[in-house]
Structure formats: structure tokens, C-alpha cells
Picture 1 (cartoon, rainbow, N blue to C red):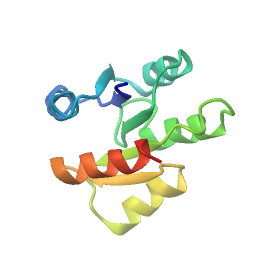
Picture 2 (cartoon, rainbow, N blue to C red):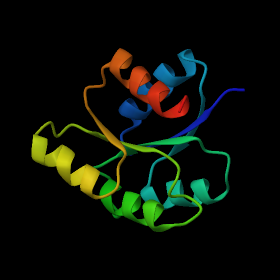
Picture 3 (spheres, one colour):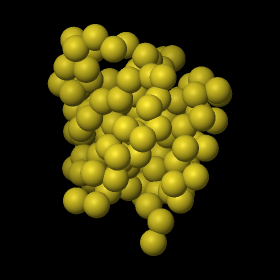
Picture 4 (cartoon, rainbow, N blue to C red):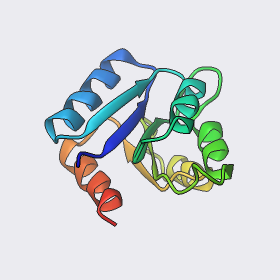
Length: 122
């Protein structure tokens, strides 16, 4: 059975790229352009993993991840933070917010798919 990944990303070009990578790897993809919409989608069920842009308008990815990880039903869903910020402190901040892992942009397709596979085959 194909796993479903929710991509929360506000940049249409990044969204298209990530979705193409995931679909080519036979994942089912759900999209949300805002953190609030992503959380609503998560609460509807059926999501196996979240790719969370850290720099989102209104509620950022770190705040959204804190809300997800504070929810008893949602907290077991892996959240991988995506960000153009490549400093170690940026990664640490995302992990401190509850992200299970962190991937920098531009996306390394092989590294991203390996990371996802590590979480979805546990």
C-alpha cells in the first residue's frame, strides 16, 4: 500500500518539485499551502509523514510542528522540516520545535527519499 505524505509548502515552484519527486517514487501526496490548512488535513487522518516548510506565512513551520507534536493523536506522525536555511542553529531550532528530521533546500532528491524511507519503513 502506498504511503501518503503531506507537503506543507507556500512556494508553488517548491511544492511542484517536491510533489513530483514524491509521486515519481510512488508516494501519494496531499498538499497544503498554509500551516493551518496542513494541520486541518492531518486531523482528517490518513497521513503517514509530513514535509514541513519552516518559513511559512502567518504560522511558521516550527509553530505548526509544536502544535502537531502536542496533539496526542498526531504526535506519532514524523515531521521532516524543509528549509533554505542551512546553518546548524537552524536545524537545531527545527529539531527543538519537534521536527523529527531536517532537510535543506535546494532539495537533494536522493537524500530526501532515503530520509523519508527511513521513517516510513520503521
